[in-house]
Amino acid sequence: MTEYLIYAFIYLIAAVIAVPLAQRFGLGSVLGYLIAGIVIGPMVGLVGEETTTIQHFAEFGVVIMLFLVGLELEPKSLWAMRHRLIGLGGLQIGLTALAFTGLGMLFHLPWSLALAIGLILAMSSTAIVLQTFNEKGLGKTEGGKNAFSVLLFQDIAVIPMLALLPLLALPELIEQAQAATAAAADHHEELSLVAGLPGWAYGLVITASIAFVVIGGHYLSRPLFRFVANSGLREIFTATALMLVLGVAILMSLVGLSPALGTFLAGVVLANSEFRHELESNIDPFKGLLLGLFFITVGAGINFDILFDEFFTVIGLTLGVIALKAFVLYGLAFIFRIRNSNRWLFTLSLAQAGEFGFVLISFTVQNHVLPTGLAQILSLVVALSMMLTPGLFILFDKVILPRFEQSSNEREADQIDEQGTVIIAGIGRFGQIVNRLLIANGVKTVVLDHQSSIVDTMRRINTQAYFGDATRPDLLHTAGIEQAAMVVIAMDNPESSINLVKYIKHSYPKVKVLVRAYDRGHMYRLRQAGADIIEAETYHSALEIGGAALRELGYPPRLAQQQKLAYKRVTEELSASLYAAWLGESGGGERFDNNYLKLFLQFEERIKEEMAFERSNHENEGKP
Image (cartoon, rainbow, N blue to C red; front, side, top):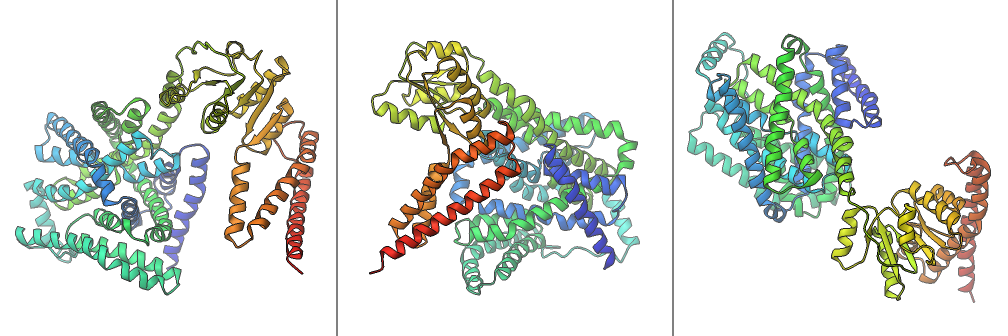
């Protein structure tokens, strides 16, 4: 017992140290887990033979992840993405497998062996890619959506792969396995419901199992979850959710199918369930922990002896796999018209081998398709390619994406042929509302924005806008700032907005400057720069939501309105004192010193007192 507790402590402390450091340096959590595994495994030797056993357990994290992915997809959503799912995903697996098969045969490998390797390397890492998409917010981009379609098809394609790979068994490996089995009579076979069945019976069992998951998930899960939810015990609901996932995974394993695919199918079936969100919130922590453990075991399981003995072979194969997959993916992105930076996101995010590669490698060894030595080298290639994936995302973020953003803005600034009463710098969400309100009241505006894509979008909806950097004095001159009454600054970059305020108030002091602020520190710096009117971008909407919350909680509408007005009145009264304290202590810097914070806390108490006073007045007004 103590031994297992020690191992658990080692894995946890490695994750606690490595992952936050990797996040701080912009490497992502997945690379942090992999580095933690390498440190406690091959480098220091704190963990050893138990790593393989733990990895089998940790693979359940992938199973849970695909269940949660399924919960996010309604069947109609799958049907809507059928073209990308089958077309893009099918071509990716087919062309990649054919490319690796042809390359293997070129190096005189048997066609069956080359095909098995091609199928293994055609897979990409669902766990790494989806987790990185979530961390970086890339899932909603065009490249992210297409990558998800390919990953989804790959997960589905595991079924025919598991059916096909045993047919590729090498006769010499079968003979060796038979001899080894005879010498080890105490070997325990895996539990199976389909072992020894004829083909027609095997097909019936598989069909019945899938039908049970679909029909049972639709008709039996709802009464079960309703019964458990009525108990009011959250831990029992969590246990039920885990029981469902485990049960489906076990059933799929017993009939020789992928547990991950079975749980994904169960998730899709439950996507319309009223208990979907409760299932997600209860299972998600287990997914994160087990996925992290899985990546640690991948790092800890790297055999550095083979890596050092076959260093150039392994590194060359790893880089070759990434390059060949990237070549195929880039071609598909071109064919399917995935444009600009999304094309590179799609290409680089899927260029690695995947965690299912470990499952398929183990399966091929068990079914005498791959020799053990070659399987170990392939495992290294898969692991190393997965470790390089965060680097590919860094390449996309730091090198490729800035170039596309720069190229999109490299065109010459538009020739401004009109002047207006108001110049609006920035036509994003904030600037659009200001512009529409002014135009609707007959006010002539000139809109400038430095992002060409936003300008083009505005023109498509018949909103006049000019491409150009509003901080350039020559553009402000042609826009008529000398005759303008005011400038509204709604730019995304806080520093640029501060610099623009300084320039306008210095060069054109009579022009009113209205500007939006991101936070309190930005507001103070804008005020210091000389802005005439400053509005926090979330202040009024937050105030309205707060008032609506009070009404929903049972406050009379009149009292809720009074509380809103009291809050606004107090903050306006105290804003000058807070600004003076900030200016006096920080000298106009971004830091909030202790005295400022003390004053801020005193003002918070003042607001509470005002709120209590308003409530008391309201109660007294209701008394006879």
